Image 1: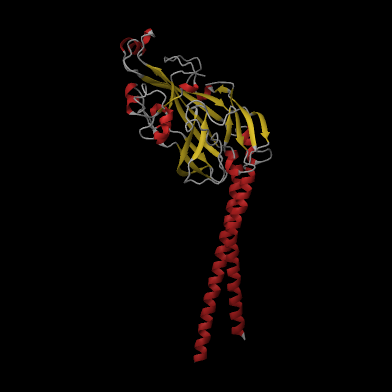
Image 2: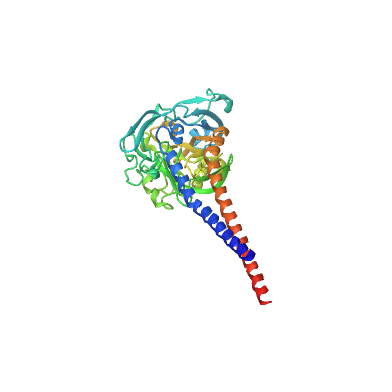
Amino acid sequence: MGCCNRRCGLIAGAVFGAVVAILGGILIPVGKIVIEGTVEKETVIEPGTTAYDSWVSAGANVYRQFWIFNLKNPVEVLQYGARPVVLEKGPYTYRIRYLPKENITFNPNHTASFLLPQGAIFEPSMSVGSEEDKITTLNLAVAYNGTYDGYYTVFSGKDDISKVGMIDRWRGERSLHFWNDKYCDMINGTDASAFAPLLDKKKLIYFFSSDICRSASAQFEASLDLKGIEVYRYTLPPSTLASPTVNPDNRCFCKNPKTTKNCTLAGVLDIGSCQDGRPVYMSLPHFLHGSPSLREDVLGLSPNEEHHNTFLDVEPTTGFTMRFAKRIQVNMMYGPSKVITVLKKVKDYTIFPIVWLNETASLDDQTADMFKNELISRIRTLELIQQVLLGTGVAIFALCLISYCVLRGRNSQSKLA
């Protein structure tokens, strides 16, 4: 009778362990569904959600740093057609995006429209000099401090979370009118401040930048730890500014075959069509990823992947961008001219670097702690419960099963004896 009770107890223990293990296993998909549901609800752009306040106004300080290229040999360039020699001077730092979005309007089709103020405040303590410093360079008649950017109209994600933050219209249009091509004129993705939640690192992320008058993509590079939060680092693929001979998709961005060596020049983007015809070219700083001839025509440049490439650090569960560095360079084209007297000695077309900028922001400690407490800690607690239940259940089941087999073996031997 005692053996029977013992066997029954072990069987009951094994069943209990199996049930506990099954419960732990069930919690894995159930917990995932609960977490995903909560995240999707809180990332919708509407008043009352976690995403809304940071969407209306940037939570972290955003800075735009300028490094200006000082021309060291202006006389030699103009009188003898010598290659320009430059030396960067900077940073000159401004705080931007400190003003909240204006004229926010929620539309019936689950979109929100707004204007983005473009103010800038000079930060002397983060700069190498004052705004009165003298620099020798080309005359750049291009605006960096306009009143507003937009109107933007973006999807709120209320009806489809995969579209949250994606730009529906910019300046009232669903496509651009700069490139005279359906592909190059597409407005793709978000403004890069956030993306759809539950990122798949195997897929590209897309964003539109009014600074370069086009959309672009970024690819996963690595998983990093930012103040105790896992983030996915995304960087621009080299194909972004590759020549059309390498990336045929860029053919429609080549506006002037004469000045771009028959569209074989890599690393620069002619944005004259969105700058009232001015000879303005955008690139990465120091012509990173650009054709060698760009750095041969202008001396004093030294591209560095770490300091000059653009990156986004995105928290994969929410899709929020936690840290970023948007680095671009503004250049002007000059060349031989019979009309402009000072350019008569110039021998060939040259893309001259004017300034490069680094627009950057990072998650602060207070926001990081709040994020970890409100989201990360809940996820980890749920994962811990799942692991404890699964591990405990398997251990109880295995222990009871082994004990039952041992006991049964002993009983069989005792009967034979």
